[in-house]
Each structure stands twice: as C-alpha cells, then as structure tokens.
Image 1 (cartoon, rainbow, N blue to C red):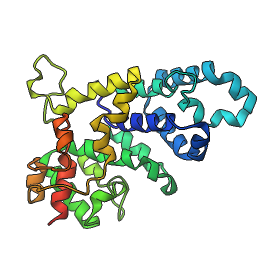
Image 2 (spheres, rainbow, N blue to C red):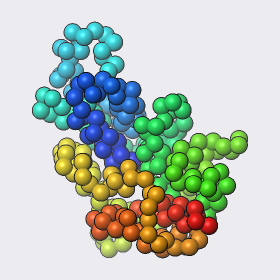
Image 3 (tube, rainbow, N blue to C red):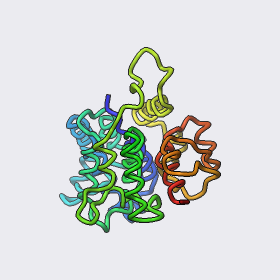
Image 4 (cartoon, one colour):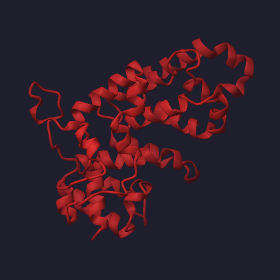
Length: 276
C-alpha cells in the first residue's frame, strides 16, 4: 500500500474550498485550480475518470449552459451544494493508495509550479520534506540539516527552499529522498506493536476521505501538524544530531502528540538547528 501522506493536506484544502460560496470560490479560483490539479495529478487513472464522470453526472447540464470555457472552472469539482461530497473526492480516494506515486514523483510535480503560484501549495512542499525526513537515514538527515542551515538560518519557515534547486545543485530534499532507510516495518503485518503513530492515524484519514467525514477533515490534528507553522515551541534537544533522533519536548504541540501525532522529526531538527 502506498503511503501518500500529503493527501491529508490536499483533503484539508479541498474541504476548506468546498465550504465556500460560489462567489467566494470565484474569488479564489486560481488557488482552487492549483489544489484540484494537485489532487488529480496524485490520483490513479481510474480515480481521475471517476471524478470527471461524477462531475458530468451532477453538473453537466449547467456546464453546457455556461459554455465550453466553464468546463475548466474548478468549482465543478468542489461544489457540494447538491448535498453530495465534491467530485474531486474520488480522485483523492484513489491517490491514498496510488502505488505509482512516490517521493520522487511528488518532488517532480512541485518543480513545475511557477513562483507566483506556489503560496497556496506551500503545505505540500512542507509535507514532502517532512515525509522524506521521517524515513531517511541518519547521515542523510545530518547532511540535509547542514545544507539547509547554509542556505538560510530560518529555512524551516520557508519550505520551498527544501524542494527547489540551488546554486546549480539538486533540491536539498533529494538528499533525503535518495537515502531512505527503513525505520519500521510499515504496519502491514500481524504484530502492530512496532508501528509508528502515523501508521495508526493514516487509516483514520483514509476513512475520513472515503466517507467524507467533514468533522474529521476539519478538526483532525494531523492536518494541523502540516498546516501550523512551527514557530513556537518549548525546550528542544540541543544539536541537530540529537534532534534528528527525535529527542525533544514540544510544548505547543503537546495536544497533537496526545492525539497520536508523532511525525515531528523534521520540525524538531529544524528548531534545534536554528538555535545553534
């Protein structure tokens, strides 16, 4: 099973956009277009076909009435005013388990986003760096932190620095992507005792997307992990090496830890490194 963690970010964004009025959605049309395109690019062929079939079944007559250019508007994939989940949900469902989408393909997709269009997708850049860091080998983590500290003292506030080429070199996150090392057995087994917390939480996200559980999509702490800037924290371990091993106490995020969120490695390392 694929482990496309950033689909949680896309689902949160889709939920937020789906709650807008048509007028509000029109004002955020370009942001919405970026989000639905990101979801479609992450989906399987069947997921994309299902999304467009659902769109046509529900909104085909109105699309026809508004003209051919209206077909390109993201509102048809996000609207829920007919009482049903947005059509883009089907693409998101398929993206959860898309076996052909790994860290490399996620990075490639981010490379094609124009500078002016990056802001709405900043959380996807942050999610990629977080996911790549979580399963990278220790030496790769150290090199990544050293590289990022050289680029910017407060690099953790600027996620796009991690995924963009610099000084003729590949994106820093590629250090992590090319040096992945297993830290656990993935949770697909008979003994769950060594699962990471993410492995138990991610299926909650999958269920929420498939059933369009709006309360979960709106409030689940996992979305806050990716969508909240890590600027305030309590005492953290001194030194990037210690931080990379996850030795830290994060006061601000205590509720998230209690709720079962343990993917804090990248933020911990960033905070520790920034204080050196």
